[in-house]
Image 1 (tube, helix red, strand yellow):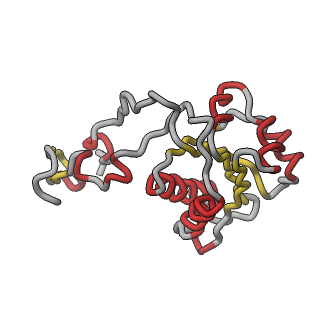
Image 2: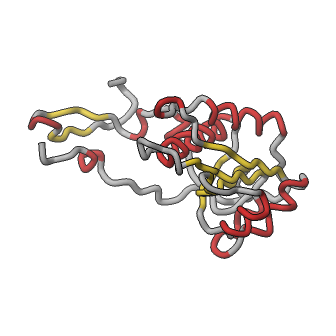
Length: 193
């Protein structure tokens, strides 16, 4: 582990031995500083070039058997796609309407022999979210949207499914991360081995 960047802990690991792990301060700043705002600056815009970089990051995500079972609908503020998409964002996710970009995360799972298509989609979306951090914006994934209406509007049919959406942009003025809680790293280790 790297030295001098934060407190470390010790815990019982696999095979009854002890491992040493790093603190949150030891991980890359792109992950350490990542957070998911629930409010966005309604004046901020994301450029088409930055949107292409987000897609490029997703494109290079690992994929079982290189199936790449993901597709995306990218809607930037005030473009024609966004005009069609916004009406399907409803309920607990109306905060997302102020985001600079909305992305529909679509998965092909009907012919997935390994059963990992959703896992692969999640990895591609995670790559997109980390690229957003590198671009100086933040992303928040959400599931509260009119999936059936959106699927009809954009012709998403089996084996494809709109799984989640991601809001991307600059956080609203005054909004700061608060209370990021995770289980202790020692709880991540499987005990029954």
